[in-house]
Image: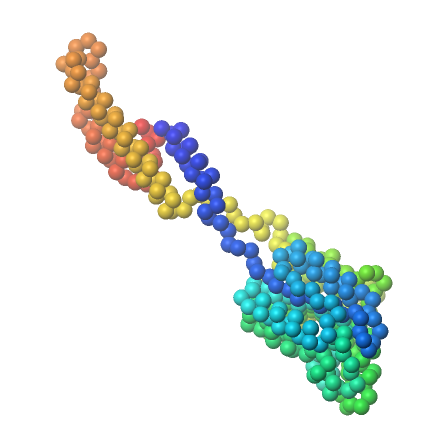
Length: 341
């Protein structure tokens, strides 16, 4: 009977292999913006290639990514609002921006392709406040990640320096990250990032080399990026971050930890059903054995004639009780009793 038990458990395990499925993968949403062709400023060389490369990496990492290239003010705002809506209930939301940005009066502004800036008063109508980007995902996703490769030498800065008492600084200003938020800048506050000679900026190139590395937590990634960018630029550029994460975030878990554990076996309800099947088999087997014993006792050789098989120790009288005890206990005892039959 042991072989029947093994066969049934094996078949049942194969049949129910998909019953104990692992939890669904994390839902990750991303918005990637690259601005290169400015209408009122020189074109940037590699912001669009930066954006495309980052979008590809994020898609490989399980992000649902929207890529927006050369948006005007309305298109940029609409994309950010869509990103905020998609971030509702997400495990992680990520925003990447490559293009011009500047800080005026303590506020950071992202510059769309259509921006025409003469004074600081134009910013509210021509640019997008970084705070409004951060507000879109505040409290909506478990983790919010923002990467800004946007501190290039800015031709808009000198225009705004005239006709206003609020002189724009070089680069972007410091940001205090909200709870659950991580903000990374391509260089330190008040300094300028380099475009680089290759297809990607030094910051984005370093980020691409590390973001898909298994087992690297996001803050460790920025540490590696910081070291690499500092070496590449001979110390002229030092990436900076502001973190208020309340746990760890991995773009890709270490090998062997991301895959869900294999099911340990059938669920309790399924095991109970199988136990009931064993119970029925045990009862039938025991009943057949008891009937056979009774038949031999009542046959022509029951009195001890030639060919009689004596039932020692009251075995025949106990057969029914034994069957009941064996088959009545549904569970591990039933399976063990069947194997002994």
